[in-house]
Length: 144
Image (cartoon, rainbow, N blue to C red; front, side, top):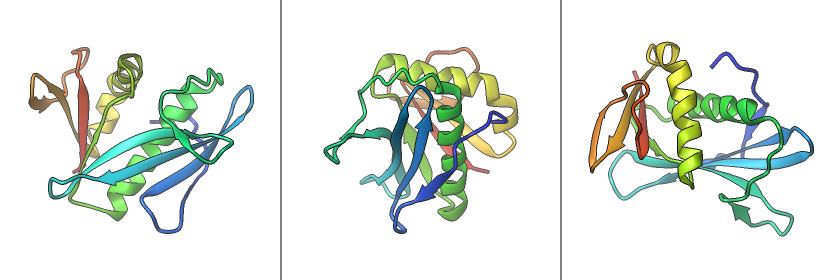
């Protein structure tokens, strides 16, 4: 994505990355990669860090910086796939509307993203090569 993005940091060599959403207010966000039981498969989650130290993947912050947050997620994804090659990253939104946001971002950046990534969409228990403007339940990305 050519959209501006927030600076991010890897947290203690873990599979977590943090950045600060700086729209209407400052919100600490985390992108967490969780290893799945399937070999070489990871799940991506975007969460907000709450004041009590817990995470929330359903909170609606309406911070006015959605595109910058999405661009930051894709920058982190690109970095993660560079340092941990030969893996598959699966992701979907925590709600249908968030999955649609990921889809919109992939639709708008598909041509550029396809140069560096293999992108698949998931529907009816099957993965297929991502087709622009087709609705998917989830997505998978690998580095080319």
